[in-house]
Length: 192
Image (cartoon, rainbow, N blue to C red; front, top):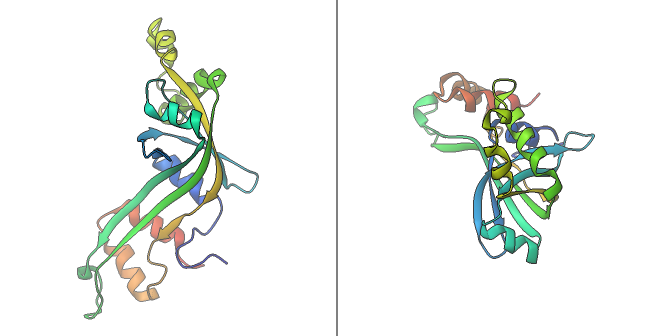
Protein backbone atom coordinates (compact mmCIF):
# COMPACT_ATOMS: atom_id res chain seq x y z
CA UNK A 1 0.00 0.00 0.00
CA UNK A 2 1.42 3.44 -0.93
CA UNK A 3 2.61 5.81 1.81
CA UNK A 4 0.66 9.01 2.52
CA UNK A 5 2.20 11.07 -0.30
CA UNK A 6 3.01 8.40 -2.86
CA UNK A 7 1.01 8.00 -6.06
CA UNK A 8 -1.77 5.43 -6.03
CA UNK A 9 -0.37 3.55 -9.00
CA UNK A 10 2.78 3.13 -11.07
CA UNK A 11 1.11 4.83 -14.04
CA UNK A 12 0.56 8.12 -12.16
CA UNK A 13 4.08 9.33 -12.99
CA UNK A 14 3.50 8.94 -16.73
CA UNK A 15 0.10 10.62 -16.37
CA UNK A 16 1.68 13.62 -14.64
CA UNK A 17 4.38 13.90 -17.33
CA UNK A 18 1.82 13.69 -20.15
CA UNK A 19 -0.06 16.62 -18.63
CA UNK A 20 3.04 18.59 -17.56
CA UNK A 21 5.83 17.53 -19.95
CA UNK A 22 8.27 20.37 -19.23
CA UNK A 23 10.86 18.94 -16.86
CA UNK A 24 14.16 20.29 -15.56
CA UNK A 25 17.16 18.22 -16.66
CA UNK A 26 20.07 18.85 -14.27
CA UNK A 27 23.67 17.64 -14.59
CA UNK A 28 26.01 16.94 -11.70
CA UNK A 29 27.82 20.15 -12.72
CA UNK A 30 24.53 21.96 -11.93
CA UNK A 31 23.82 23.02 -15.48
CA UNK A 32 20.06 22.79 -15.98
CA UNK A 33 17.52 23.30 -18.74
CA UNK A 34 13.74 23.03 -18.88
CA UNK A 35 12.97 20.56 -21.68
CA UNK A 36 9.77 18.89 -22.92
CA UNK A 37 10.06 15.16 -22.25
CA UNK A 38 8.06 12.05 -23.07
CA UNK A 39 7.67 9.20 -20.61
CA UNK A 40 8.56 5.69 -21.72
CA UNK A 41 6.98 3.09 -19.47
CA UNK A 42 7.40 -0.53 -18.51
CA UNK A 43 4.69 -3.19 -18.50
CA UNK A 44 3.42 -2.01 -15.10
CA UNK A 45 3.04 1.60 -16.33
CA UNK A 46 6.01 2.92 -14.33
CA UNK A 47 8.32 5.40 -16.05
CA UNK A 48 11.54 3.64 -17.09
CA UNK A 49 13.00 6.39 -19.31
CA UNK A 50 12.41 9.94 -20.44
CA UNK A 51 12.88 10.76 -24.12
CA UNK A 52 13.70 14.21 -25.40
CA UNK A 53 16.09 16.42 -27.27
CA UNK A 54 18.20 19.50 -26.73
CA UNK A 55 20.43 21.86 -28.67
CA UNK A 56 23.92 20.54 -29.37
CA UNK A 57 25.25 23.83 -27.96
CA UNK A 58 23.50 23.30 -24.62
CA UNK A 59 26.13 22.87 -21.82
CA UNK A 60 24.26 19.74 -20.75
CA UNK A 61 25.53 17.88 -23.81
CA UNK A 62 29.17 18.22 -22.73
CA UNK A 63 28.24 17.54 -19.09
CA UNK A 64 26.39 14.30 -19.84
CA UNK A 65 29.02 13.10 -22.31
CA UNK A 66 31.55 13.41 -19.48
CA UNK A 67 29.25 12.06 -16.74
CA UNK A 68 25.85 10.57 -17.68
CA UNK A 69 24.30 10.81 -14.21
CA UNK A 70 21.72 13.51 -13.61
CA UNK A 71 18.39 14.51 -12.23
CA UNK A 72 15.03 15.32 -13.82
CA UNK A 73 12.36 17.27 -11.94
CA UNK A 74 8.71 17.69 -12.90
CA UNK A 75 6.15 20.00 -11.30
CA UNK A 76 2.60 18.88 -11.79
CA UNK A 77 -0.55 20.50 -10.46
CA UNK A 78 0.02 22.60 -7.37
CA UNK A 79 -1.74 25.32 -5.41
CA UNK A 80 -2.15 26.97 -2.04
CA UNK A 81 -5.03 25.64 0.04
CA UNK A 82 -6.65 28.41 2.07
CA UNK A 83 -8.33 27.87 5.46
CA UNK A 84 -11.33 29.68 3.91
CA UNK A 85 -12.18 26.40 2.15
CA UNK A 86 -12.48 24.43 5.39
CA UNK A 87 -15.18 24.73 8.06
CA UNK A 88 -12.84 23.74 10.94
CA UNK A 89 -11.74 26.94 12.73
CA UNK A 90 -8.42 25.41 13.86
CA UNK A 91 -7.39 24.14 10.42
CA UNK A 92 -4.23 25.77 9.01
CA UNK A 93 -3.31 26.55 5.41
CA UNK A 94 -1.22 24.18 3.33
CA UNK A 95 0.07 23.63 -0.18
CA UNK A 96 -0.97 20.64 -2.28
CA UNK A 97 1.15 19.39 -5.15
CA UNK A 98 2.24 16.50 -7.32
CA UNK A 99 5.94 16.42 -8.23
CA UNK A 100 8.40 13.87 -9.60
CA UNK A 101 12.12 13.52 -9.09
CA UNK A 102 14.08 11.03 -11.16
CA UNK A 103 17.74 10.10 -10.87
CA UNK A 104 18.74 9.23 -14.41
CA UNK A 105 21.56 8.10 -16.66
CA UNK A 106 21.53 10.07 -19.90
CA UNK A 107 22.31 8.35 -23.19
CA UNK A 108 22.55 10.41 -26.37
CA UNK A 109 20.77 8.72 -29.26
CA UNK A 110 21.54 10.94 -32.23
CA UNK A 111 20.05 8.46 -34.69
CA UNK A 112 16.67 8.98 -32.97
CA UNK A 113 16.64 12.79 -33.17
CA UNK A 114 14.01 12.90 -35.91
CA UNK A 115 11.90 10.40 -33.96
CA UNK A 116 12.22 12.55 -30.80
CA UNK A 117 10.81 15.55 -32.64
CA UNK A 118 8.06 13.58 -34.38
CA UNK A 119 6.93 11.90 -31.15
CA UNK A 120 6.86 15.21 -29.29
CA UNK A 121 4.90 16.91 -32.07
CA UNK A 122 2.42 14.01 -32.12
CA UNK A 123 2.01 14.18 -28.33
CA UNK A 124 1.45 17.94 -28.33
CA UNK A 125 -0.37 18.50 -31.64
CA UNK A 126 -1.97 15.19 -32.56
CA UNK A 127 -2.94 15.40 -36.24
CA UNK A 128 -3.23 19.22 -36.18
CA UNK A 129 0.30 19.97 -37.38
CA UNK A 130 3.25 18.20 -39.03
CA UNK A 131 6.96 18.93 -39.31
CA UNK A 132 6.47 18.63 -43.10
CA UNK A 133 5.14 22.19 -42.93
CA UNK A 134 8.66 23.38 -42.07
CA UNK A 135 9.95 22.35 -45.47
CA UNK A 136 13.75 22.47 -45.93
CA UNK A 137 14.14 24.32 -42.63
CA UNK A 138 13.37 21.09 -40.75
CA UNK A 139 16.58 19.35 -41.88
CA UNK A 140 18.66 22.37 -40.84
CA UNK A 141 16.98 22.35 -37.44
CA UNK A 142 17.73 18.65 -36.95
CA UNK A 143 21.44 19.35 -37.50
CA UNK A 144 21.45 21.61 -34.41
CA UNK A 145 19.87 19.21 -31.90
CA UNK A 146 20.41 15.76 -30.47
CA UNK A 147 18.00 13.26 -28.94
CA UNK A 148 18.61 11.62 -25.60
CA UNK A 149 17.05 8.94 -23.47
CA UNK A 150 17.33 9.41 -19.72
CA UNK A 151 17.14 5.95 -18.15
CA UNK A 152 15.48 6.08 -14.74
CA UNK A 153 17.69 4.71 -11.96
CA UNK A 154 15.41 5.79 -9.11
CA UNK A 155 12.15 7.67 -8.69
CA UNK A 156 10.97 9.88 -5.85
CA UNK A 157 7.37 10.96 -6.45
CA UNK A 158 5.57 13.20 -3.96
CA UNK A 159 1.82 13.49 -4.43
CA UNK A 160 0.69 15.63 -1.48
CA UNK A 161 -2.94 15.93 -2.46
CA UNK A 162 -4.87 15.95 0.80
CA UNK A 163 -4.61 12.24 1.58
CA UNK A 164 -3.91 13.06 5.23
CA UNK A 165 -7.10 15.13 5.66
CA UNK A 166 -10.32 13.86 7.21
CA UNK A 167 -12.96 12.84 4.69
CA UNK A 168 -15.04 15.93 5.51
CA UNK A 169 -12.13 18.38 5.16
CA UNK A 170 -10.92 16.65 2.00
CA UNK A 171 -14.41 16.96 0.48
CA UNK A 172 -14.62 20.67 1.34
CA UNK A 173 -11.26 21.35 -0.30
CA UNK A 174 -12.10 19.38 -3.45
CA UNK A 175 -15.52 21.03 -3.81
CA UNK A 176 -14.34 24.57 -3.15
CA UNK A 177 -10.82 24.86 -4.51
CA UNK A 178 -10.66 27.28 -7.44
CA UNK A 179 -7.95 25.25 -9.22
CA UNK A 180 -10.10 22.52 -10.74
CA UNK A 181 -7.07 20.70 -12.17
CA UNK A 182 -5.66 20.32 -8.66
CA UNK A 183 -9.08 19.24 -7.36
CA UNK A 184 -9.28 16.56 -10.07
CA UNK A 185 -5.84 15.24 -9.13
CA UNK A 186 -6.89 15.22 -5.46
CA UNK A 187 -9.94 13.16 -6.34
CA UNK A 188 -7.74 10.77 -8.32
CA UNK A 189 -5.52 10.25 -5.28
CA UNK A 190 -8.38 9.88 -2.78
CA UNK A 191 -8.45 6.80 -0.61
CA UNK A 192 -10.52 4.02 -2.22
